[in-house]
Amino acid sequence: MAFRKLVGSYKDYNLATTVIEDGYLVVDVDTGSLALGDGVTPGGNAISTGGSSSSLGDLSATGSTLTAPTSADLILQTSGAGAVVVNDSFQIGSGSTVTTILDEDDLSSDSATALATQQSIKAYVDNNAGGGTGDLTISGSTISTPSNADLTLTSSNGNVVVEGIRISGTTIQTEDSTAGVQIAGNLIPTQDGVFTLGSSTRRWQTLFVAANTIDLGGATISSDGTGSVTIAAEGAVLPTGSKVSANPISILGATAGTQARPIQNVPIYVSDGSTTFTDAQLLAATAPLNLEFNATVEDVPVYTDAGQTFTLSDGSELGASAAGITLFQF
Image 1: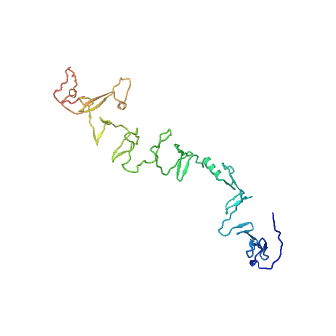
Image 2: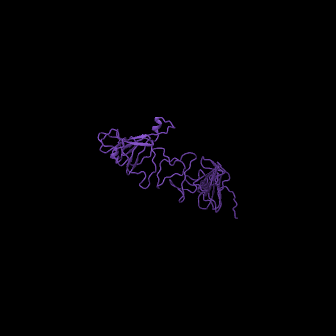
Image 3: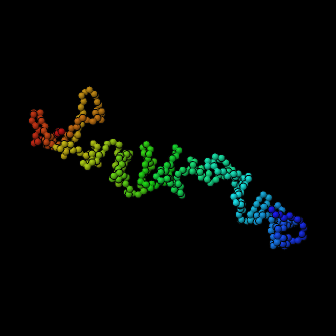
């Protein structure tokens, strides 16, 4: 390799106006700055500004600080496949000191002075519980599962709290073996008189409500928890003692001959004498026999009017034309 031997000589010239021969190195004895001549530029091309600072190109070096011109980038670039090697550590601004960059998929070093590669960060996020998304896809505010897969949200003995929820499909179901979906609050439609509960082909089996009033379009139904009402095409079956407002409903007879007559049901309790019952116990039991007494006072015997016969004590039959008012009929 060719080289030039430097030979020193003192020149009492003004360096700033003197053209230095190409390849010659000069030093300003007053400032200590170095310049390299090119045979054209007065004063040559500055290499060092002298004193405690020096320059390289348009960079300046002061002590251990290398500074680029104002607002200019400082670029460290290698040739070919080389790398910029920091032998000890580096620091950005007043941040933490970094000593190395690690490629660990599990981030097992847990170092406060090491950076992680992009690949190791992605692998850790994908594969570790608590930070991983598994096979989920997150795009903006949308979380998507693979095709036909369920999205499961599970808490550790806590609750999954959702501020607002909207169902795109048509089914809400539970796989829990307990009582089903429980609602802790009021279930209120967003519009009045628009939505239905069930349909003509999909009906609820049993509706359990408390004894408080049911409001049907402003009309109310309430219960004290006893009795039952059965509705069929033949009519409604009401509990005994039903009323219209404050007035009791009259009961008609159960046979073909008495179904047009008001009657009074009288239960008959029997005992073989082996067991003693109080009146309260008897009334609480189901009577084995019920007699229908005529509820009105008429002059037509109820038996004959119903097409039945009644034998009197003298062996004769009670006639339909029996004279006088009948006070007691059953």
